[in-house]
Image (tube, rainbow, N blue to C red):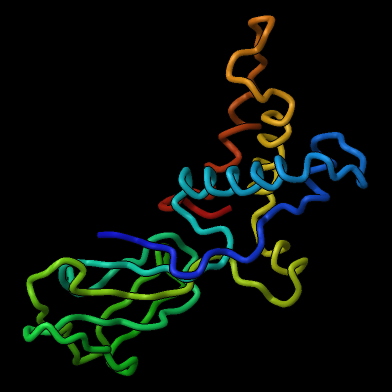
Length: 202
């Protein structure tokens, strides 16, 4: 199983203005914007790796060597929609499954796709990536980028900003005086516990 990004996220959960505020910079201080932009993306990617979620909507492609049974889970919830289900038939010709022949569950986490009632998946050619499912995943926008970010969990934004501020202040792996303060787990990594796939969403 392989998951690739087809279309990357267009925004981030935290704005540059919010990052500046957490790093105790003046609102018009843009000298560190390149570093802050890198930190924002890195923290979002780290949170996604920890939780198994897509926090910003993007297009993903799941590739499989064959249809793996009846129900196929689509990684990195929340699932928004399925764009297409394609497969290579026995002759090596790529076919597209009619959307009427499968159903999608976006309420479940991870979301999933399965044949519609009375339908089955087709046989595929024995080859790499014989099945390819393209889908939209991530917290969906309701309007402007501001609305988009309001849909994202508050604990995610707090975790990102806390860690960004710590890395901004301590850019080396070794602190010169040999001391390093560590946040209690509930205020650090623990903020992401309820967002991990397979746990109850709080």
